[in-house]
Length: 116
Image (tube, rainbow, N blue to C red):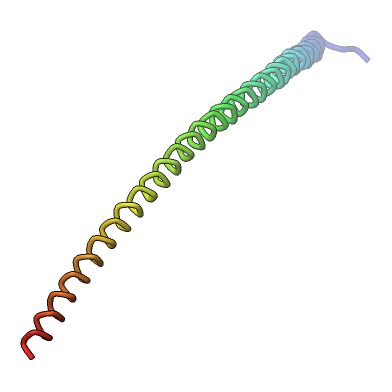
């Protein structure tokens, strides 16, 4: 079998195209591998950052809770003091009203008994 020049050139071109295709696939595969490595690295950095931010947020919330508890205790103490002061003044006022009522009642009774 004799191969002519066109057939040789065609097979050579086919072989060259196949080699080029394989080379491109290898190049693309290399890029895909690099992409996956970079992706994993980014995922780790993102996860680490998220964990750090969550820790910061929890710390901030705990500090705010402590501050709110302090404020709540102060408010409760102030309310108790005010309620105690109001009870004292209301007791005094009640005693004064009771004394005044008794005096008026005595005067009214005296007037009623003297008129008879």
